[in-house]
Image (cartoon, rainbow, N blue to C red; front, top):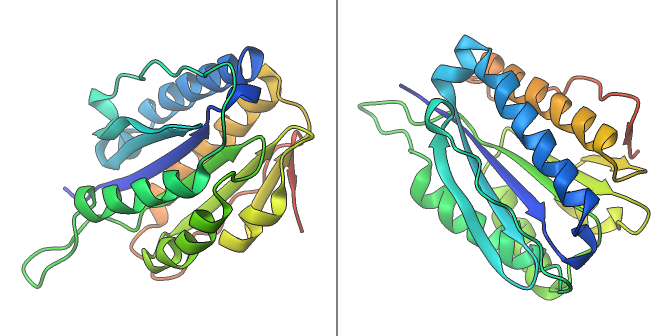
Length: 211
């Protein structure tokens, strides 16, 4: 069975502590529950979660939706936002976890990448170095979400044209964002196989498109 790999990178730096990260966890749980109601997604979707603060961890290796248990996501009291290192880890994991096609059999579908941050990369040099490597992995879609007033959209725009902004970091905003993410993934599962990039559905009112 060909899988649709989905990589989700979540900022767990100190500023996400408290309501923001708790809201993200609720949003993730809703997203998984929504996807499990879609028989096609249940067969094809695999999800990996990488968190980044001063440390970068793959808290969920690429796992099929039906076997997925959401990991405990914790935030330190303070710390840097090592998004460059998170992208590096993700690239390493994609190269190992995503099945490449051979003449005998087709590989996995083109993966999807979602990045959620409320700041900007502390490791800017590493981040800039990783941009070309991420682009070379041929994702069907890369979505950047800048959450809250301090999030910097410029670094995300270097990586993808699909940058969205959440003005508030409350439960409602994150919930709507993750509902939309599940729509994107569901669509990805149905429209994959085409060489073009995925056409994203329109986001909800809480999620502002950055032009």
